[in-house]
Image (cartoon, rainbow, N blue to C red; front, top):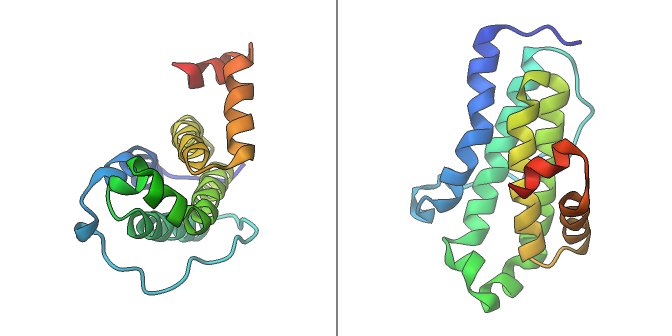
Amino acid sequence: MIPTNSRTRRRLLPLALLFPIALLAPAGLAQPVTTAPAAATQPVAGAGNEQAIAAELQQNIGKMRELLGGIDGLIDPAKRAKIAPDIVPVLKRLIANFDELVAAQPMAKEQAAGAKQQFLVFLAVFGDTDANNQLKQMAESKDPCAAKARS
């Protein structure tokens, strides 16, 4: 188990709750992404790793917002088709970021699960077959944790 302190928890747990706001905020408010998202790395114990995960998560959310260009990126079928090849890898990296966050900060598991489910929905909207299959399995599951996803 990775030792954590309450300051780290207070800083990282709200990230999972803030991403819907990041999606719906006007794209003009996003700061431009100046570097490409870092490749997934093996988690390393310690608060420094949690900070790196949080930074990569924020960077990937910025990239997603940039690609979406506003709510039209989700609701306009032509725009969805155009940006799907670029946004699907970013959404998958975001899910991986939340997995890394949970590995580094187990207290974030519940919040991260909700965020991951929402990103799975976005992946399905952009035509990702694996995400669609995962959501279907979650909906059909008798597992209480998966049942939460249905509500």
